[in-house]
Amino acid sequence: MAKIVMTLELGGLVQRHPDPADGRRQLVTLTDQGRERRLGDRRAREEWLARALRERCDEDQLRAVIEVMGLLDDVAHS
Image (cartoon, rainbow, N blue to C red; front, side, top):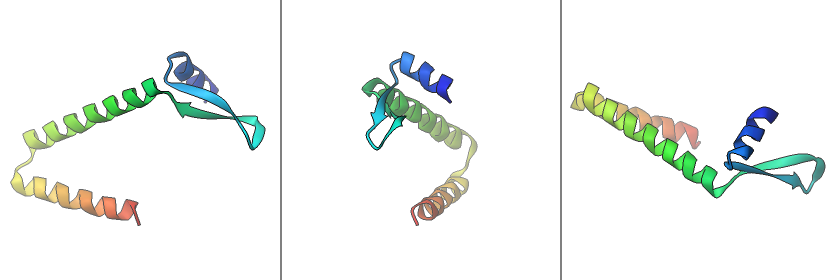
């Protein structure tokens, strides 16, 4: 994990801060650049999924996917 965090830090995507409650620990937060990258990656995945569903599914299948996504959202937020 330390190598991953160091690589992200060197890339300007995260920064470390001392944990005020425990001096032995460090808190890792996204930088502005890291947030932009995360949002861009998420948008790309969403666009890919939407395109794949449009290309491969008929109307009934799309409705079923939308219904299941709603159920999953309910479960995740309960």
